[in-house]
Amino acid sequence: QLVESGGGLVQPGGSLRLTCAVSGFKVRNNYMNWVRQAPGKGLEWVSVIYSDGRTEYLDSVKGRFTISRDTVKNTFYLQMNSLRPEDTAVYFCASWVVADDAFDIWGQGTLVTVSS
Amino acid sequence: IQLTQSPSFLSASVGDKVTITCRASQGIRNYLAWYQQKPGKAPKLLIYGASTLQSGVPSRYSGSGSGTEFILTINTLQPEDFTTYYCQQFDSYPLTFGGGTKVEIK
Image (cartoon, rainbow over all chains, first blue to last red; front, side, top):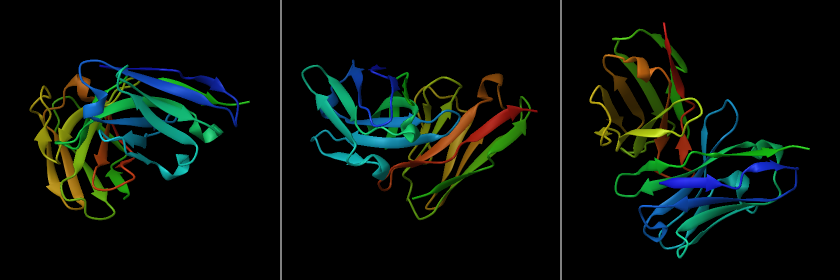
């Protein structure tokens, strides 16, 4: 099970940290992702942290967003800085089944609104 | 890699068979998954590896294709199937999704 938290209203240029608490499996053994969905729009992959700690990002968030994990708390995070109105979306965390190449477990989503 | 789903909207009736196409801008072998998303909910995995049915998903769902063209087929539409479907590629970064297909009741 994945449970997100940390969403909310933030002004442009502000920061927010999203948290995804994981139960039932270990974050250190899986590829953990963030996916977002702007209001009324489609899905957009944002970032992944591999089991070995390496990371990948969508170009539009590189240098602004940082994905990380805490293997003791079995939790992973998305630190979002320099937020823009176009970052407004529901952010989902998702687990990547590497052997199957699919996101098999998703959180319920947390809404991030960037507005003045 | 850009994924283009067609149609964007589809009207059908309970009991119909429908097909949704996902075309990739370059070959992605069979690294494609299909998801169903209901309003206000997280996506649900239906198909991975282009054609493998996820455990627990009804057998009326099937996937086919390889390379650049993929198809999701839903046989005998049920009331709970009227919602939005997305494809996703895992061939290369950034991972991308198709624009979605909304299946509506005729």
